Each structure stands twice: as C-alpha cells, then as structure tokens.
Amino acid sequence: MKLGRLNHIGVATPSIEASIALYRDVLGATTIHEPFDLPAQGVKVCFVDTPNTQIELIEPLGEASPIHGFLAKNPAGGQHHVCYEVPDIHAAKAWFEAKGAKVLGEPRIGAHGTLIFFVHPKDMGGVLTEIMETPKGH
Image 1 (tube, rainbow, N blue to C red):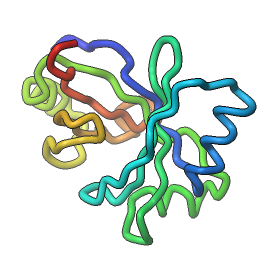
Image 2 (image 1 turned 135 degrees about the vertical axis):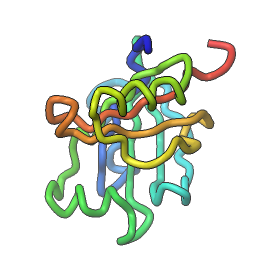
Image 3 (image 1 turned 90 degrees about the horizontal axis):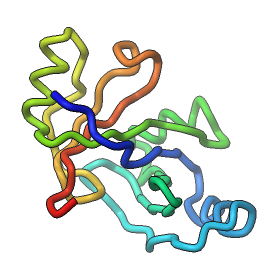
C-alpha cells in the first residue's frame, strides 16, 4: 500500500453556516463550496479550499449522526479526522487489516464521490483516519 496526499482535514461543527463565516471572514478563505447533505453518513458537508488541501466542515443530520456524539463531547466542534488518498481502496483496507488495525466498516462512497473507509484512532496514534481512493483524473 502506498499512502498518497493529504486530501482534507475533517472539522466537526454544530453550524456549518457559522463555520463558513469563520473561514471566510477571519481566515480569508475565498473558495467555499456549497454545503450538501450526505444522508448515508448522517452529515451535512461543506468543503473549504486552501492552497494545499481542503477543510471538510461536517455538521450532523440529526441525533443518529456519528458527528452528534462527537459534538456532545466537544460542543464547540473541532478536528474530527484526517483523510489520506490511496490508489486502491481495497488493497489499502487489506493492508490495514493485515497490520491489525481496526477498519470501521466496509468501503463506501464518501463526500468526494469516491470510496472511503475509516481506521480507528486507537490504531492511528489517536487520530481518526479516513482513507480515500484517489479520485479518477487526479
């Protein structure tokens, strides 16, 4: 398995609109994509472009959302995960499992429209890690 580039940093927020204002008005972000719902993962998502990666703002879509539990412990929000690209999602999953890492679920379509999975923080130095197949054409 070959680890690719850092694709994005996921930031949980109780309000995407308030977070957009922060990134735009305080941090000077100029490219902020339109928020959209991702019901399969129980979240609303908005990407903020930076010169070398993206910030993925994540707001829960109800109490069943995995982000809801994170915000219960961190009411102001905060860094939720980091996401790295890999050329082959299935080979990456097999590689992590062979190393004894706990993969959280099967590969599924993520916010970029490509296959993703998460690796448990206890196996990744305390950081929830998203592994994403590199989008075609990149």
